[in-house]
Every structure is written in structure tokens, then in C-alpha cells.
Image (tube, rainbow, N blue to C red; front, side, top):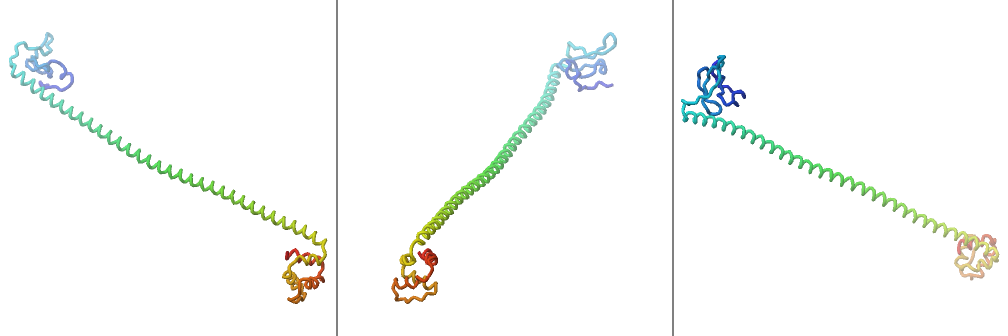
Length: 227
């Protein structure tokens, strides 16, 4: 195995050089701490990196190597920072966009739901109002009809009662008295209906005498009809 630079954690975090000492016998390499090391074997013949007190490479070389390492490290750090920042920015943008989308979607949903609710409520209110109005109208109409019917019934009943009373009273009177209560026009009409010839110039008393041939019941009936 050749003396090759290692990139594993073990070699990168230690103070010594990032090279396996066993593969670099007698060689000098710069450690991770910036100091010079030499691969020297121990008692058992295993090579170990040992610090060199007298740095023959010189301070300028050491500084150059350190500067190069810093530059590489800085470059790596920058890349990492940029990558991290990009990830953060992307994450932030996605989060923001998601929030906006959710907010917009929520607004639309709320608006739509509100419209539906209003529409539904309006329909219900209209239906309720119509139902209420219909009930009121029916109730009112029923009351009116009942009132009207009652009035008619009362009126009819009164008429019937009046006629019955009147009939009873007429039956107690004479035919002449009954006919005497009617006008001459009505008397002529009764005579015509029963085929009794009465001159138009004949006075009321003469017309009555002509109608006296009719039965009392007929006279009473005609009286009630023409009164």
C-alpha cells in the first residue's frame, strides 16, 4: 500500500498527518495541526508519526500549506453554507406558498359555504313565510266565510221566522183586509197570474172584489210573495 492521503474521519480529526504512518516509513508529512511529523518505527517495528522539533521545510512552506488547507476548508464551508441557505430558502418559499395556497383555498371554501348557507337560509325563510302567510290567509278566509255564512243563515232564518209569524197573523185576517194591504199594481199582477180579467181603469176596491173569489190560502201565499 502506497503513502496516500486518507479522507476518513479517523485521519482527518487527529493532530498528526492524514497518512498511514506504516505506509510512509522515514517520510515527513505535515499534520492536521500544522506541525511537521516523521514516520519513525517503535521498538516493535511499528511506525508512528512523531513530531519533528527542527522543521526543515521552513515556516513559509508551512504557512503556504496551511493557507491552502484553509482555502479548501473555506471553499467546502462556503459550499455547505450555500447549500444550507438554499435549502432554507426553498423550504421557506414552499412554506410561504403553502400558507398562501391554504389561506386562499380556505377563503374560497368559506365564501362558497357562506353563499350556500345564505341561499339555503333564504329558501327556508321564504318557505316558512309562505307557509305562515298561507295559514293566515286560510284562517282569515275561513273566518270570513263562516261569518258570511252565519249572516246568511241568520238572515234566512229570520226571514223564515218572519214569514211564519206573518202567515200566522194573516190567517187570522179576512181576505178583504189582506188584499187591502197590497198596492193596486200588485193586485193587478195577482189577477193576471190567476187569469182574472180586471179593467185597467178599475179602482182598488173593484180589483179587490174581483180577487175575493180566490181561496184565503192562495191570497195569503200571493201576499207573502208580493209583499
